[in-house]
Amino acid sequence: MILSPSLLSSDFGRIAEELQALEQAGLKWVHWDVMDGMFVPNITLGAPIIKCLRKKSNLFFDVHLMVQQPERYVNDFVDAGADMVVIHAEATNHLERTIAEIKRNGAQAGVALNPHTPLSVLDYVLDELDMVLIMSVNPGFGGQKFIPFSMRKVAELSSMIKQRGLSTLIQVDGGVDPENTAELVRNGADVLVSGSAFFGFPPYAERLKTFEEVARN
Ligand code: DX5
Ligand code: ZN
Image 1 (cartoon, rainbow, N blue to C red):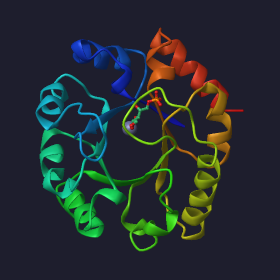
Image 2: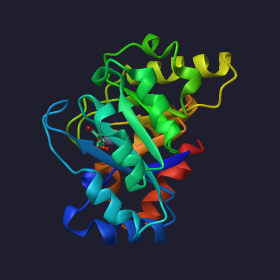
Image 3: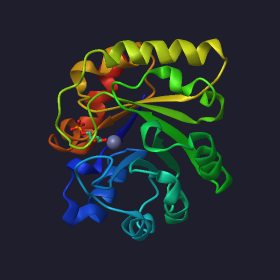
């Protein structure tokens, strides 16, 4: 299990220090929530900020674009140093083309699905993806409650991936905490995003250990 802490719950005035603290605590990934005020109600940050902070961190930058028509911006995020760019299936009419664009520019590509979006939208593109992000809350805010049917969605996606002999990662984002971690991992989750249940419980090295311990059960 990979834990990808969502900076949305960190102190935005100290992102550089937070990145350093994560790395020192043994984290490997960090999750950037990019919100445009259109696809979701909130606005957070964009490629110029990620580009500046790229120079200060060796973490794997996992960039979740909650942005309408992400095809307008994917190149900016790859150029800013994103290792993985995740776009929402609901936000574009040109999913296949945008996935290809991300990969052509040298990053890994993922697709995120809102809670109500069926897995069937992935049917023809799954083989092209490095990761699928299952949203287990409606995107836009940190600190929301995990939607229980997401568990079944993760299990169904996991069998779809196995059936095709793929190694696509399954990421789960929203309301993840040490209580639902074990079941998520049993159902096939590979990467867990945690915002409030991570940053609210320092020290980070201890919190990482808690997630890793429950994930083994
Ligand atoms: C929600 C974001 C999530 C969020 C997770 O729109 O995509 O990454 O920050 O926060 P928690 O873990 O608090 O639900
Ligand atoms: Zn996210």
